[in-house]
Length: 412
Image (tube, rainbow, N blue to C red):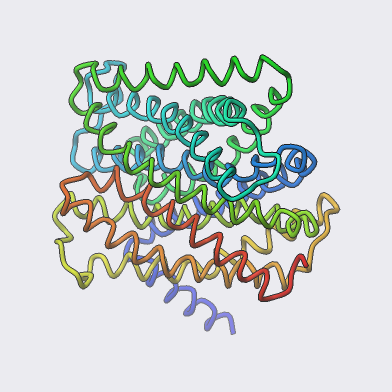
């Protein structure tokens, strides 16, 4: 019996990749991410009263979480490529590859958070989210929460880059899950904290107005400071992040519209950050690996994936099933810990796994063909593919999650 289990485990590990160390790094990072996103889910469930008081707040949760992954996942992917190509060196100088990447990520965080608020308000009005926050309230929440979260996630990303050079980690395998985990863990409390200013009168309006001014100044500095790599990253990132925010917010609309279902079964609310986080983490790992292989010349622009790409695609497809099952189990466990209503462990595992498989099938195609499209249009795949993959995952993931919940009759 044990011999058969060992043989199965050995075959499973070989499918995940030829390098056991890289496989171990990916799996460890994903497991850490599940724990972190579970804590984020508990935070979201504990804020259900605040979500009910501020219509529109839940709308920006998936997009704000995705934005951390979009900006800093792309940063980690670029730094990973720089490590592989021998261009990486941590330095305080702003004109280095490291310095320009860090400055670009900070600037993009502020600019993208402001854009996110504008689009969120527009979509809330368009789709009839009753009593949604004002534009300045959306800006205040998005930018203040995003700024707090960005500083922490940036520090984690830099620490991972340093650790990869110090301990031999492959940044492509650990950045996406751990940046996602950190983003989930800190973005939700940061958004809830930022929302406390809403309803305080002029304070919210002043914060929203100042945030818009800061975003405008940040954009001007990024484009005129005279650092070519910084300018290129920002120019390539802005349209991608703009589209990504729009797509993620449409996913947020789907979730916001089903708020009653989530409030009826708080375990589903706990599931939301972990589900979206794992989908983004798996997509980020695949996008990072493919981006690095493009830079190293291991993948060419072919419609049919070559062996080097197929190995990574297969590994993510196989890994997705147990990871999403664990997400469902973790969400149910979290609900039991805080004495929250749950439809049951089997139902939670079924919801997460079925919805996750549907989302994964899409990410495999989007990550590969998105990488090829970035190369064809002269963009850096490290900059473009992760936001594209994450945003489409949010939309498809929201659709598959809600469809699965309805199909299984959960939360009704």
